[in-house]
Amino acid sequence: MIIKVILMKIAGFDIGGANTDLAIVDFSENGEIKNMIVDFEYLPMWSDNQRLSDVLLNLINKNDDLDKIDGIGISMTAELVDAYNKKEEGVLDISKKVINTFNIPIGFVGTHKLLTSDEVLKNPSQIAAANWIATSAIISEIDENCIFIDTGSTTTDIIPIKNGKECCEGRSDFERLATGELVYTGTLRTNLSSFLKKVELNNKEYSVASELFATTADIYNILDKINDEDYSCSTSDGAGKSKMESMIRISRILCADMDILSVDDVIAISKFAYKKQVEQIAEGLNKVSKRENLNKVVTIGLGGGILGKEAVSLLNLEYISMNDFYTKEESVVAPAIGTAVLMYKHLVNSS
Image 1: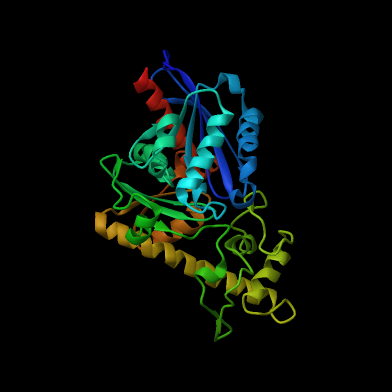
Image 2: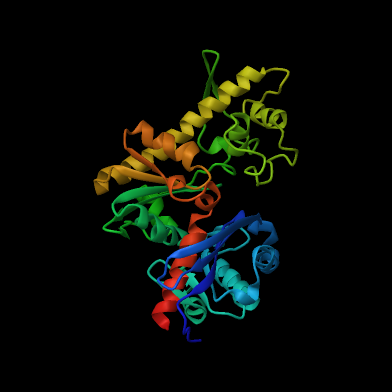
């Protein structure tokens, strides 16, 4: 399909393991963003991936008219969920669901370029976990030489940008885990025992039970760093999301309960866990910063101001928040916005 106009409305989706994010972007005739609507829906792809098509349509129909959308951009990380035996299987399943849902031009963000529907079905390995490339498209407009930290619900991307282009040493998640560019820790869904082996409490050191008793969402719920809307994932025990229910879950990581621990004890545990998670991100950031000789850091995502900012401060680097340029809601879905930008450029170059 040949696009003859430059003024367009593009829907960018970032399909994650837990959340599917949307940005509907109106582009002016000179390619600038005129207007933007962002939204997301919790969709656990490890159990409910069959609902993907309905979620995609629901997100668009809730916010705009599908008939007015000129193109769909897709980035994804959901191919990693354990519903799929291989990443390629996940990419193909997700891509086919998207292709069968929309009858307009679709582009998939790849590790080297944006792929058409036909290309992605032939080369599925090229688009696995490439949403950080989409984010680079908008962060480079903020600063041409920086590192951006995108801390979402599950993972943290630490991406260097030089002369307006991302310059990652790794392309796949597997490679980036070795370069410091991917830290598998997030603001909501991370099992506390994945980074906490010991907890210091009341001048004693306690080993942590290696079970999924509590997640980082409980920590930031208790510390008032997220609100009810932010706590979008399921709880580890299937119970509610009140502060007391979060405290009960956290007490279990020390094989205790709220008869054994006080509220102050659980708050102290939460603060200790927060400090350790910041250090975990700072380790990756320090590795990338020293290697690339970059000292300016842009933080984005749900955890940008919670974890990213503190990691930057710990290393005495220069801090910039994406929230100074975009709203908090837009910052949280930055990969979806970047995906829409890349799709727009693709359609313009194809016209």
